[in-house]
Image (cartoon, rainbow, N blue to C red; front, side, top):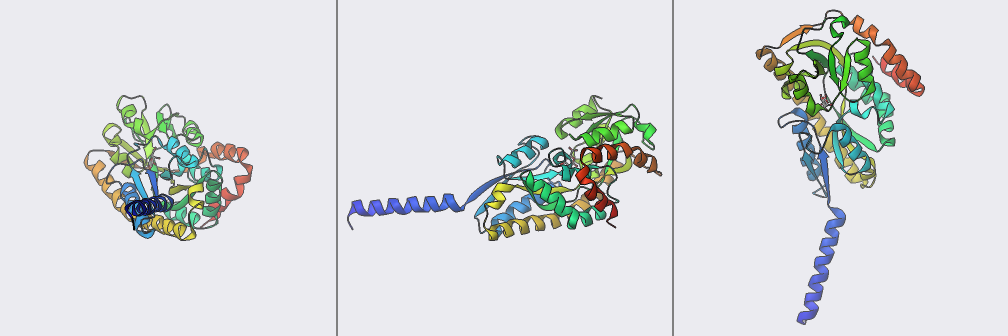
Length: 327
Ligand code: GTR
């Protein structure tokens, strides 16, 4: 073979390899809001490893933690339009975009975390997933985010009267603003990353979250009264852009789903451990924790929140009733 011909052949082979490489290897980027060591952070890193393993390296996922790629509402938008492929989202900020997913943000709708998972694993979960998919998000698996309770820098909350006049940070979702208003407080929708400073400088008096987030953000250092209202139990998802998901081969879809489900098993185990550890840590730091012996007045105050939601979304009444009827 003369030199020119062999060079041409080599060039062609290189071009083919390159082309094959670009066609079959996808590089995804994923968003997560939490810090290193947080259950979701560890589980999303495991998800990334499993995606690579199970697709034989056809797909790789680079995770960006700590909200470095933007706030949660922005990241949800980015995954919807395909600027990012993957996100580990809380269904709270998804609610304003996906009415079906907003049902989980009705205060006190779930009896406890197990009830929430029973709903998600049944017909309710299918309806929520279908709603999300219509808006460009496919949930691959559900993560645990425990129950959210109120905390503030002023006094323990035992009854709705104790919320009166308090400025409380909420996630961006009108349901949460309505919830605080019904309790007589002033809601302040704000990005997660801004809450520590806002509490510290008394721009807000309080906020609400689960044990691990209350602890990992340092909010307990600046808002030392944690009152166990457990008013919201909101699931989180490993979500993928719908177009990206549907462009995968059936084998790849299976691999990616299995990877997400396996990461969820890990997340739920780590979550249970971290809830305990976080509570112990804030208790040792001097946080005053109080149980609320009677939650009925809080629940009763939510009547108008439910009524408005159902008036705005009459077609979601069956889903709300399905959840309430799920044992
Ligand atoms: C956390 C949740 C985050 C974010 C945050 C918040 O519990 O895991 O996704 O929603 O709460 O309050 O903004």
